[in-house]
Amino acid sequence: MEINHTMPHAHWKKRSAFFLLSQNLSLFGSSVVGFAILWHITLETSSGLWMMLWTICALLPAVLVSLFGGVWADRYNRKHLIMLADGFIALATLALAISFLLGFRRMELLLIASVVRSLGTGVQTPAVSAIYPQLVPKDRLTQVQGINQTLGSSLTLLSPAIGGVLLGTAGIVGAFFVDVVTAALAIIVLSRIPVERSPVASAAKPMRKEIGAGISYIFRHDRLRRLVICALFSFLLITPAFVLTPLMIERTFGGEVWRLTVNEIVWSAALIISGIFVSMKGRFRDKPRTIAVCVVAFGIMFGLLGFSWNFASFLVFMGIAGFFWPVMSTAQTVFIQETVPSDMLGRVFSVTQIIMMGAVPLAILFYGPLADVVRIETILIISSALLAVVGLIYRWSERRAGLRERGE
Image (cartoon, rainbow, N blue to C red; front, side, top):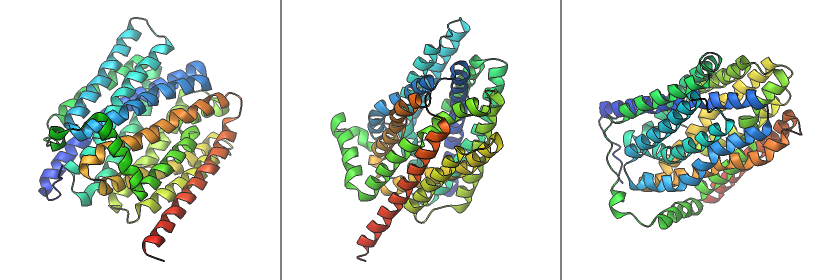
């Protein structure tokens, strides 16, 4: 599939704007539901085991289906895949809302709905990541990703506040209906964007061979291989900071909903500031170095969470850490988009998604039960120290490879 990087200026801007609008509408509804379910489980159970179960249900199905989603993203119309996945997720949420309204409010229903929603995400995410080069000129990818990070973070800033208000007033069912409405709007907006169908669809190979080709491509490509290995270990070690911090807040500082809400608002505000920085900067000259710096920064900041002496200091460390997330995410995404041929993008993104998302449920199998016998602060300090080491090793390996290429 050949990408037109000389498309008229106004044309690509209009298509990009509509696409960003549709995806951030979808993100907003999903964030509201995600926070509502997470907080509901946290406040109802205060259990590391239940946090583990929810994390597995929310992430593992996406990991399992992602390889197929990557092949479909390279084989079929990416826009249609995104719309179908959004509709599938919305229907699952609607069914959950109806069940709760009818009085079926068992915690297990939240886990089942999370599984179904995760399956839709596993199909949607590789298609979304792979479609950008079809809409945006290559030299504007970093800028558009920065704008997307800013928009997404701005909506995510609102979603925990709205999620908290809904939990306190309309209950969790209100959050479910917000997701259904925003998904419908996202599908309508996306339907208005013209996106060419990939010609790969007419010459599709067996699924097994296409999946194997994507995996083989990554591990034959030295820089992609190093990036994937770094991502695997990073996400294994970053899991406590992503999953267990709400539980740490509830246990250490108090179980009020406003504390969980403020924590998410601080994180989202940091993402907004960082997204603006990325969109203004426009590009990163050495993307692997940028990724390494961010991983080390996460190791330092998330480790400091374990030393927080009060809730305010916890929020400061969380906010500083949040600044580095859009920087790392953008550098990693654009590096892949610039490096990988378009007809392989879906599969490469699906493999990276499997590694990143698969690492979290794998790690939580260990961290979840551990959090019920060991202080979360201790877990954060140890895992974050190792995370910083991973960033340093990745930077060292990239520099060493660069010196070899230059014959030094």
